[in-house]
Length: 325
Image 1 (cartoon, rainbow, N blue to C red):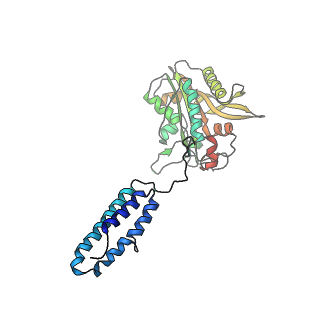
Image 2 (cartoon, helix red, strand yellow):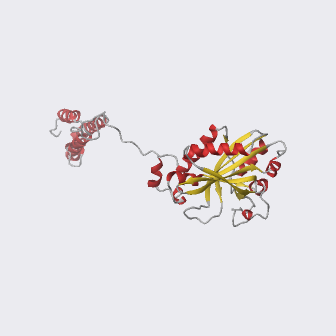
Image 3 (cartoon, one colour):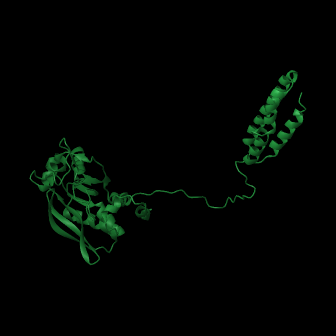
């Protein structure tokens, strides 16, 4: 048999493996003994040249040594660090790396803030469908068939005659159909109108419509609620005014302006609910009365944050959105 001390070679390799402390050191040992030019690989190549009567025993010892070393390497590899850390010192008091954290969209923030004010005044937040019928979007709101808003140029119609709601007042009608007064609700949500997109217009935007109905709600109640709402939103020193206006679904109707710098800005539409709307919803207008109002969420957000282009809300620029975290 070739003059090889297998026991001594095994002890030598195992001692080297035992003394290794990293994967890099173990890889160096593997290459030294099991690589293409390694010591044990060289013994495997010698099997064919060993005398025939010794070849079987020699081959068995070489393969046994190879298997032992591979097993020992695998066991040791599971115990050591993947890299050399001799010069690394871990300080557990250092702060960690904070992951990027998202935040609510400014429109969502504004909706929640407005909703919280009205919830504090006893109103309930309700939701409704965005695809509606002409009845709920127009007829039930006392908007006649000849009204311009019912034209295809002012409303998105589907191929089957439905439409994308142009105001969330549709939710108010559906709630009145389902529930008896007293009723205090606000309905936030997306609405759609085929407006040309520019700095102050969008084909999709957000509204919050409010409704209060019982047996004795008056126009004075409407003024009181909106005074509280606007001053909580813009500050107690806010100046506001009520101007006569016309809406098909309220009578009398008003627009509410606020003093903004050196000018008046319209921010709300409101009025006493038209008796025709009560009839369409199944209420007897002789027994109930109430008020309704509507506010554009984007307009409020733009005023409060000094934003001069409505398109910024929908373009998803990270630098813009990060300002509202």
